[in-house]
Amino acid sequence: MIYTLMHKNIPTADINIDKYSGSIFRIINTHSTAHLPVGVHYKNGAADLVGLNEWWSSRTIPECRPGLKAVLEKLNARSPKALLRSSLGLSLSDHYWIKPIFSELAWENVNFFDNDFSGDMGDLLFDESQKAEGFDLRSPDISTDGCLKKRWIISEGKRLLLKGGDPPYFYQPFNEAIAAAVMARLDIPHVPYSVAWHNGFPYSICANFTSQNLEFIPAWRVMQIRKKPNHINFYTHYVNICREFGIDDITDSLDMMITLDYIITNEDRHFNNFGILRDADTLKWQCAAPIFDSGTSLGCDRPARSLYEIAECKPFKSRHIEQLKLVTSFDRTEFSKLKGIDEEISSIMSDNRTMSLLGETRHRDISRFVSRRISEVEKFALQDVNRQ
Image 1 (cartoon, rainbow, N blue to C red):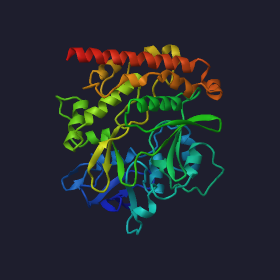
Image 2: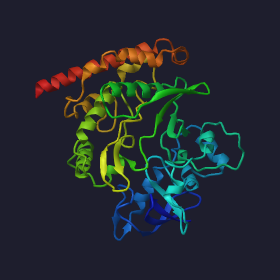
Image 3: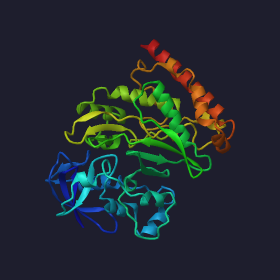
Image 4: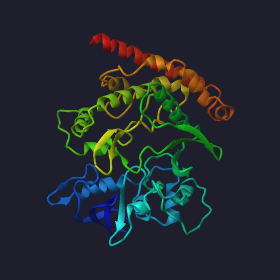
């Protein structure tokens, strides 16, 4: 089936999408090279088919999402990518979509920033659907990445993401709220998270950080713009490209992110959950995106006694202490602002409902652990200053 890949109302390429697999198997022609997805190259007179398919596949629900197999069976779909056509490939992260060839549809009439969307896909993913057929799949849930249970809702006109945790303890929602509390005290640009309960289970809830004009470009797409020279590492490669496109203070943002990730022992800061914000109309890169998706931290899959064994991390180094050495300056980090964070952490985790799920000592264990990590970073920063 033939569609035009659109960037808002600008045609970028006419593409042929396989009805069953959902893959792009042919690029018929290219209309705008400037508006192709970031990192998709134009060479030999055409957009790169492999690169475009890689980008297209990244828009789908991953196979690791709980309950996905049952959802696909109910929808008679072979893969999550096959569902993208049902929602025109629309997302709440960027402004790309697919328009059926010769259609009169316009961005203003279909985008999820301004228009309501169906809750059917979210109901299916949460195993709450009462329908057997007739599903309306116009939903950003189809193009939302991540292995945790999640869905988008609209509340008082705001687009909110509800995200669960892994059983049996569901630590991730609480970790998101704790990370947000740390960042708020340190004045780190971030997405605020809180904990909400739904049908007896905890979820993190946050507002969308993109808008009708601003879109999110993951770091992985940024790094596809140029081939990484063998003599430089991924950190330098990413910094170089960001500076080339006008984000001169990118190291400041990375300093803050790396410092946070050490404090909360984030084990899953990968190249798709940080990046930059771009103006979708002018294509001008604006700034580093606010920090989000920090739930896979604070020993989210282990008991408290194992917290002190955590050493591995992503994305630039494999161990937290080595990644901390990439911080160019701790000048923006006022550690004094974290005084009393242990009490704030306890307040997030110590109500009766939470303690009945997590146990009565988890909040104290996490509070002590975070305080210790803060002391370690502060000591490291002092030693770094002395070395200079």
